[in-house]
Image (cartoon, rainbow, N blue to C red; front, top):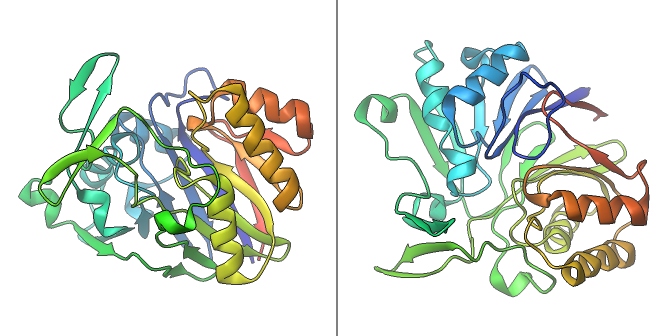
Length: 285
């Protein structure tokens, strides 16, 4: 069985100059006659524009997975739902804390709704939210990591210092406890599809390895180091060298050009590969 993963939306790189993709990330996964979207970016019309360019029909999307509730991963949901004309409800898999209230300071501006979109009744009728803290199966060969608890985050995390969230009635620092990734079982090992990997790359890889008793073959997506100091990037590089067996790294979104440049210098272009909008990667399962 062939699985195709295509970058639909990305805030870092552009393969085609006329293809929009600022602010966020989204992947289209074609597997076993099903079409799944992982994350939806920030701006709905950009998502739909890119999907149209890539010949992806919103009505043919069977399921959605949201890695976490930050706005640049979930706000495109409204655009996707509005673009669908089918009466079938759209299943959306995510962590129960993905919908908690969040705000963020971005360039000294306080954005009160920096998290999950507020559903109007007509939107709510068209979606089915499926919450789970545990690893669950989305479709054949495709699973979620489930929650990676704070106790399991023994290595470097990739958190956003400008985010605050509301839990138990009070505002506090956002640990992004809802952060999850997708795990694809392939003939060559596990493939991780991340959003920002706020839980930390090695922590997420270790969770997947523990769940499925296999090595990591590839990582696709963002690893939130866009604002990281050189020392932290070097620490992540050393963790990869020490703990993992040279997985292929298809990096984009929140990884940041500096971190990607450092990783390419360390591992080479054959291991660290760009994953711009329009890039399609195939795996055998």
